[in-house]
Image (tube, rainbow, N blue to C red; front, side, top):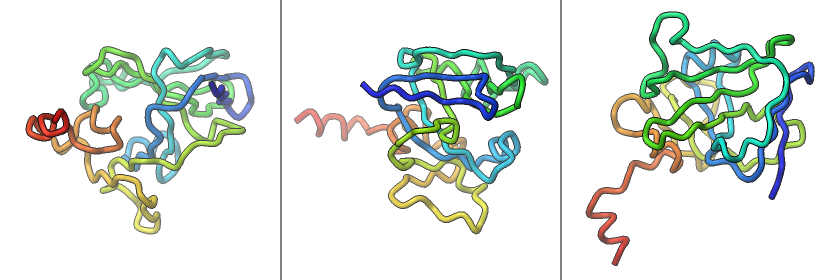
Length: 172
């Protein structure tokens, strides 16, 4: 099983994970752009069971702390973790309401020697800057909050949940 370690810019915070991510994706939402200072973020999601260790001091931002409003669809909000010394955004964690499991989303740029597959989904493409091209073969999701997708479909690379008829035909 492969082991990967993500580090902040000063090296004081490290997150080590084992195995393959649930999802590698890009998010173009306006919040991710503002918090990262970039035009999109690229991340890999891992279930809590795959997180081997987290070391170093981080600070946390969660919208619930400021105004009681967290990320849509995430009742407990999302905990955005960054190095207390250099300020690098390393990871975010949240409890997925549909599973009750904690998921860690780690910035791809924090993995020094990482080899990841290309992202399979791009979220909030309505906020994509016009000079940023779509990633070939990645599912393009205009706005996951418009009601057409669920968190579960995001974990399936943006594909909507199968209908009951599709599930029946798959069982045949």
